[in-house]
Image (cartoon, rainbow, N blue to C red; front, top):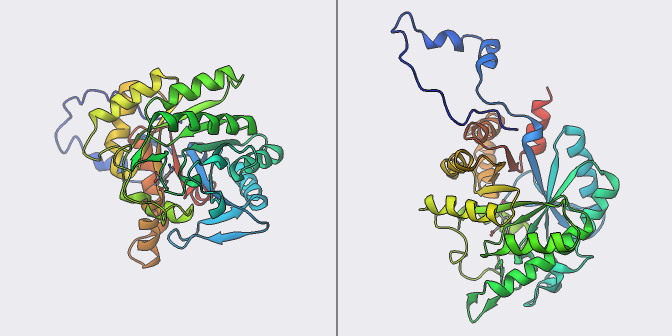
Length: 341
Ligand code: PBG
């Protein structure tokens, strides 16, 4: 839900003090609400969920206080909670067993892998809730990389073929939104063509178009168990934090290949990119407030150094102000609960 006018009105000359006293409009909560330029609602939020095997399990992720890995039955409980809170979508991330992390990454397109089983369970129990999934090989690779590694290099085209198989298996499981997060070239076009050919005309693609090689993904890699395996970094495929023109080229490229929505990731340090992308293309633009951003706010709050609730709500509103249509955030249920009051 986008409420910010992306072309701000020209700032006309204003009356001088004391005829103009901007504080007049900040005097009461009612006045501030009346003139607020942006709004935040549960409908703006996508809730990332970590899935593991077993039953009745909610296992804490140490570096993300309050976040757990859930067995599928508990994922379904969370999905019901999301729907009750007015959160329109959850995004699934599997914690794959070590045995299923292999060089050929075959578990990625197994119709019965964790992610696909969780999708079916959610769609059966909570059909109105949207399910989004991640397309990338890192949860299934013994290297922790998002693509195949050959001779120390992350190879592009062979990876794209695997990503297409992964995306098709996800579509067949019933996902509403496919989120390619791998940053290989050509993947959006290849996935879109395969979805069309496979009859999955209505599966939307939210491309991780501007995904940066970031230190802020650290806690996530612990959550999905890919951190220990990862050798080196992801700088040959994820973006250089120094670049913004390149982000716009990638958004344009992904849209031309058939992306319906685009994403900027991480979130808070990249609000300028969110702003530029939304203003330039006018398509639904999302930000991912990633694991490290969540961990920083939670850690400071737990130390009593900041007010965690206020920092959470402020950070989410800032995404809306920057022009984002929505935010993927681990804060989704907590924020939606506060917004319900
Ligand atoms: C995997 C993927 C990552 C995240 C989402 N999908 C990690 C990475 O690229 O290493 C990060 C999410 C987060 O940090 O919360 N392709």
